[in-house]
Amino acid sequence: MNTALQKIREAAEAKIAESGNQEALEEIRVAILGKKGELTQILKGMKDLSPEERPKVGQQVNEVRAVLEDALQKKKQELKHALLTERLKRETIDVTLPGVRALRGHRHPNQIALEDLERVFIGMGYEVVEGPEVEYDRYNFELLNIPANHPAKDEQDTFYITKDILLRTQTSSVQARIMEKGKLPIKIISPGRVFRSDEVDATHSPSFHQVEGLVVGEGVTMADLKGTLDQFATSFFGPETKTKLRPHHFPFTEPSAEVDVTCFKCGGKGCSVCKGSGWIEILGCGMVHPHVLEMCGIDPEVYSGFAFGIGLERVALLKYEIDDMRLLYENDVRFLGQF
Ligand code: DAH
Image (cartoon, rainbow, N blue to C red; front, side, top):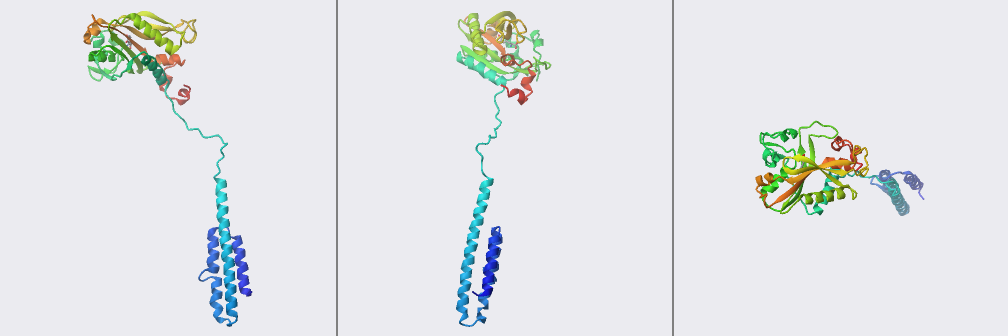
């Protein structure tokens, strides 16, 4: 073979073998096979050869071209393959590695307690209704037997919007709203936020939650109230729980009582949760005052009813053995994550 051709071929083969990427390969192809490439130059120089030599050299050039094209093609495939292998190696997924857990939120302990509580009452046929947090004095106080100069107004000092509009101090306001509608019988609970002008401490907050209960119909007695509260206490705190009604005074019920349950922690023996007494106070209740029924347009000669008001935070704190109400509102996920 023509020595010049031979040299071109060997040099090209060496370069192809050494090339490390597609761009380098393309440069080699242009330098040898391109319009101004080395092989093309030889073809152009054929006019200076003798007529006998021309076909021979022509054939040799074609052979070298075919060999180099083949070599380029092979190298191209090789590089492509190497690139893919490298990428696959980099992108392998080790399915045995521990996964990265997505952080999931969950219900607030107050909300868990509320849903537990609602389930118990819905099971007894109660309807869940809501009332406004910004309320008229009329519903929050007046229709509940707390007229303008009543001392109970001092105990429940709140935030006034105007003289007649305030942030409700108790969910009992919903009692008056529901009774006033005049649809009987009534069997509702009404959970919601209430407000009082209180300083923050372990058991007080200017904003907390209550769940009101109201039943009005013909022949509703205090025995129904007691039975209902017993059912609630055993379902919510556990089957061994006993209730005790202590006489008390609320302006809108007569008679009225505060209700204690046996301590779910010690069963009544006395411990740190119940402060040694064996009993824990959880709510206020009573028979709806006839005057309240009357003011709300219900005939107390025909109808009677009972009502109760549960402090939601109170039962949540007790149930989960939390000793400071502030923890419920600080929204520290290290604390909230435990429930
Ligand atoms: N509203 C009362 C309070 O905030 C609690 C209460 C007591 C509600 C007796 C009632 C009830 O429905 O009958 O202290």
